[in-house]
Amino acid sequence: MSEHEGMWVDEDAGPLVRPYTLTRGRARPSKEIIDLIAIVITTGVLPQGAASPEQLHILRICRRATSLAEVASELDLPLGVVRVLVSDLHDQGMVTVRPPAPIAQLPSERILREVINGLRAL
Image (cartoon, rainbow, N blue to C red):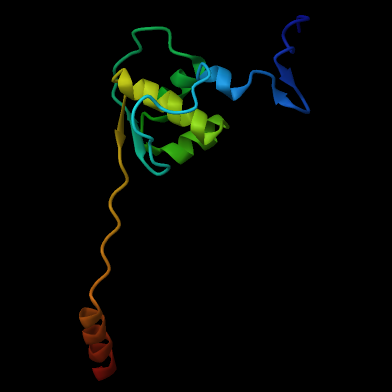
């Protein structure tokens, strides 16, 4: 191991490169905030510029549909940082972000009562 090889990681403190450096100091995505359970999918478009190692890892992870929470967990990075990185990839057309499916509306009270009455009749 060279004398500089281990200088970026401290066993007790973790990585010495702070998360905000990965986003160039930005705390928010360029457009709307991506939901925690939004689905991220790589589009197959190759990076035209110099993508960061974290962004390349995101592209590999998202070859299959993956939620933003899973991406953050896989990268072991704060959710806010991953939101910014995914947003940048989305702006460049490298990933598609699908919002979570809407929560189904609950049935009306009348329908629930009819079901209960039908079950009682059995």
